[in-house]
Length: 238
Image (cartoon, rainbow, N blue to C red; front, side):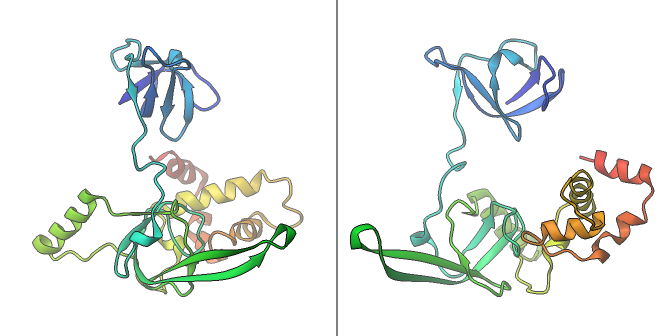
């Protein structure tokens, strides 16, 4: 569902179109809200439908998979998972990875008043990734039926290789959908960071991002050779 904003706020602009993730506006709803994709929740009075009418008095719930946790017990070696987050240093968001190993450890811990309990930790390892990762069910999802079907058809009809990341030599930065635009965003945040100390903008960018992604000065060479107009044009691209 697409809606149009009736006013400008710090995040949205009057007259622009926005995609709805969920709508709770039924007659019994005590606090009607519309959830705009990538922007959060807003009062329904701030939006109209594409024809300029008030939003319908219905509920459109979030997708059932939005907050669904993946169960470790349902996983098998060889399964393909999609990464939901950019917080892994070695994995890229929306990248596909094949499970090479699943393991579980347990240990006895002593808590308050000497009470003992067993702590179980699950680990997952992917092809081409050197280290095991502690499993988080919200960080991954299985391929949807449509994705799996499309992958199978492309393999049969066009002999297309699976878009599964499996090389240990591929750097995360090189897998970003729009590498230069993402790097410019990193630089922009470093420019306005008051805690940059005496480091250059480039060095501070690399330092602050090293927890999430490995960067080297050479990654920025193409950007540094752009003129300001080219940088702005790249930022303005969708």
